[in-house]
Length: 162
Image 1 (cartoon, rainbow, N blue to C red):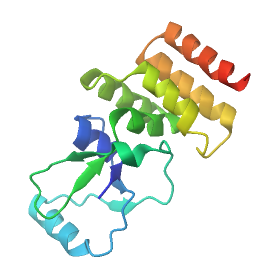
Image 2 (cartoon, rainbow, N blue to C red):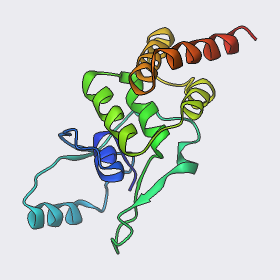
Image 3 (cartoon, helix red, strand yellow):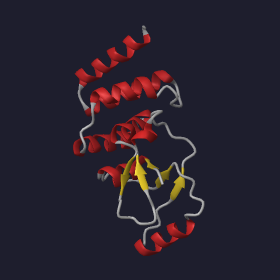
Image 4 (cartoon, helix red, strand yellow):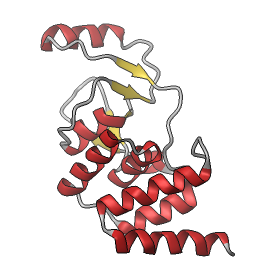
């Protein structure tokens, strides 16, 4: 199963920012019994749902990371940290920004990788491109600095001018 969103940030990267559900890219057919058993055993009735749309980099599947390898009957994967953060920055609400900041504190992200993947692997993201770019630049500012935000802006605009 491939988890995304806040559940992936919590399970894969120790982010404690609250999440209300577990989003997955995986069809849950055949997992109903296991989900019910997990809910019964833990006493937690957390919704687990496949998400119809997710904005992740084109090549994210080649970089998935396995979590909880001790699970015998379920292989659980989360996006690599930079990929997960890019998906959160497409929306860039306060909760997403807080989660990305906490993830970056525990698992330092690469400024260069974020810029490269946004530029080269996020052209399919849903929404107005200018708004998505502004959300990304806001995230760069929060995670790195004002100077890095300007550096990212220049890198993105130099690509457009080619």
